[in-house]
Length: 74
Image (cartoon, rainbow, N blue to C red; front, side, top):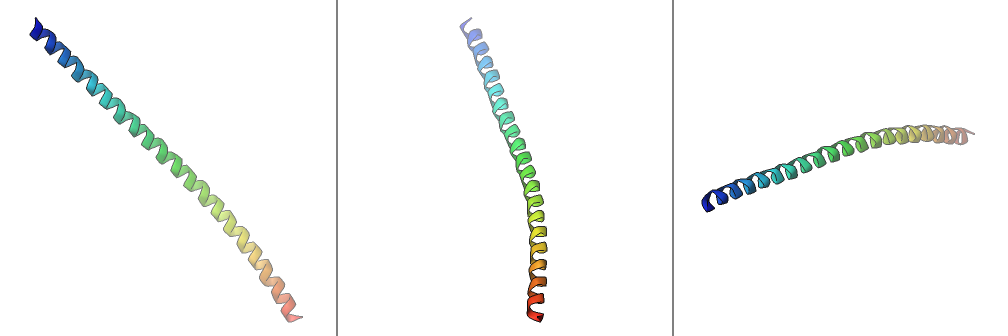
């Protein structure tokens, strides 16, 4: 009986250990997926902001060049 009990306990510990391992793997996989999604979203937002800043800068620089040309010809 002692041998059967040890075998059942060993099987139980193996099952629990496997479940803990799977839980850890799934938790880190979800963390990776969420982090990857978050970083992708941030990169897209930053690209939009950069494009807007570039457009604003180009508009401002064109106005500055035109005003400098006006003053240099007069």
